[in-house]
Image (tube, rainbow, N blue to C red; front, side, top):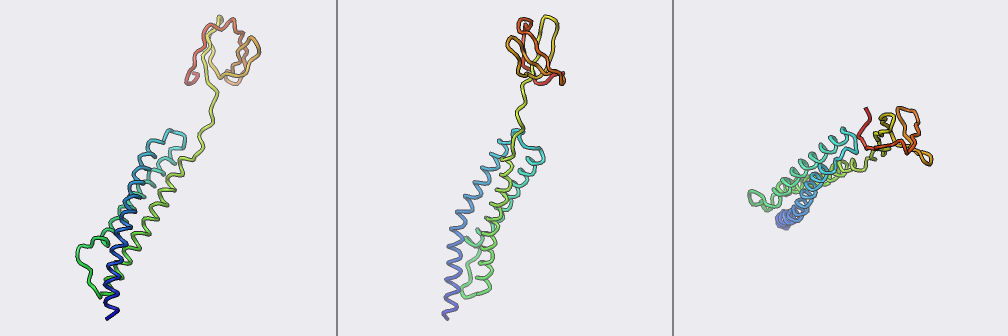
Length: 178
């Protein structure tokens, strides 16, 4: 008889535990959603496209896994039918379902962490600004370089030019030189 009573209390304890875990899982689900939004906003082109796509897929996978885990634990916390007291197999089934739901939650968090690593990708090194310089003798375009006093240093297709400042009539930043 004590075995029957313990099984009934065990199912009730599992349901209570599942309700607690369900709250934690909903917080994790919200966190995954927030990370997904932040992941989309953080893709500024600093990391390679393949890494951005992989990170997005990992965040979606974490979301799917967590939804599955929430469903598993919710069916333990709020079963469709009353638990049968004294039914050992029923208690074992709901225990396994709860354990599986909690385990999948941890896997979802790990997958999310893996997807978030992409934000640590080193950004491309800054390049020197390119400028278009209009002088009295024509227009040149290149990358600014250190010059000498009274001159503007410019790298034009691998050649270092020193343009005298009195000859410079206009200096315009450009995205790239033609």
